[in-house]
Length: 535
Ligand code: G4P
Image (cartoon, rainbow, N blue to C red; front, side, top):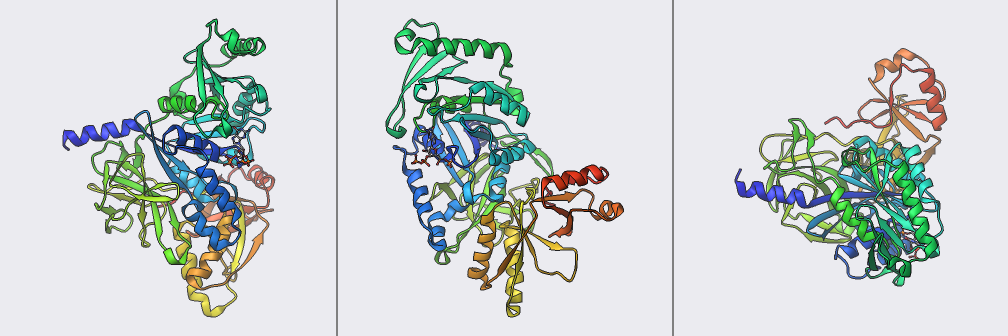
């Protein structure tokens, strides 16, 4: 390899940070994303992303909604620069958009930002997404948001994270006041107080006064009571809390915590700065030839998400590739590991919100969107040079189940074809009854939207109108070792056995309790919430 390329790759990796935000709806993800873009100079006035979202929400017709949603029905990648760093924000859909793609996006992220509403603390969706991050052992940065509103005590929130998620916490900054009296944050590393001025809905960067802790000016700038409280809190923190340990952070065992208010921009820039210092840059990936470093000279990457545009006029499909090594160049020819095909990567896209932009080069940690004429499946590897294949992306535990029926026998073929293609694309998981007489597929999803997408696309792309019958299950577990251990235990109660598309047994339960009961009764059965994709 030329030394020129080597230093180009080293430099590119050093400058890159990639992350996804995990949060529960309404915690402020859209607002924080927008403020990060504002500080990154990618937008000049906050409001644009939100306006688009509001527009989407307001459209009720499905088709129109789809046109609006376009790429946003699944994740979008936002790229911006800050202090010479290229930052890739892998946007995970939330709300009613919640689907398996939300989880898959985390498989392409090197870091996660856990966003928490100070009044609500940890919420359901955040916990679920946290589990996926934990499984991957990626660093988690916590931003506790909405400090401009009355909320829970900061120490209580740290305690909740520690107790419930088993993560050590280290407060990087500390809030000064709360609600109407939220004045700013204290930077523990630099021992400086940041006092902010509010601007209208934070559409511009917040004006920020920085004062050292012992500075006499503080008395003029900050109410005495708040100052005393800060000093007390800090003493307490120093006394009880551990030191910041970046190794633990990088292993996903300790989370640096930041307090702020995305809406008023308080603490956003400070967060961004420390995040860039502490976050992991693109690292090694496990593959069939062992661990491959991001500076490996040949290009390679894997597909973590497929996106079909549901507008019949623009029926393009996009495969999102996480670049793992080397340098991607427009029009390059690559190998497709699963099929052995050779593919020319024309028309690559970098995605900024909904506007698609063509890109010429990309490096490890970047995401590119490629037109996908049915070649790519989730987890596929593309590479140049020596053959390698990355570990697949697991199937995530579905929580919603429904039988899908095709009432029209003359459409049998189209129905089968549609189901099989949508499954390959990862739009939904497909399971079948173990009773051969029951041939209707069981759709298994993590979000309601996935059912809607499947029915909509079957009708529009395959001409099949289907009926959906919801099933009363909410928990699925794969049986490790397959059918043999399952057949050994004999009859099981309060569960239904089905098989997934690879004929592996899956147990469905109505609730967690039934699942736990079975685990207690049959410790010899090893159950798993995720199934690996065998490539
Ligand atoms: P999401 O993407 O996580 O669902 O959350 P989003 O950013 O849409 O924020 C949800 C609501 O919380 C919004 O209010 C937003 O303005 C508000 N919010 C976000 N960050 C903060 C913050 O730091 N402080 C306060 N006080 N509120 C915050 P909304 O009423 O739904 O919308 P809007 O009318 O304000 O636009």
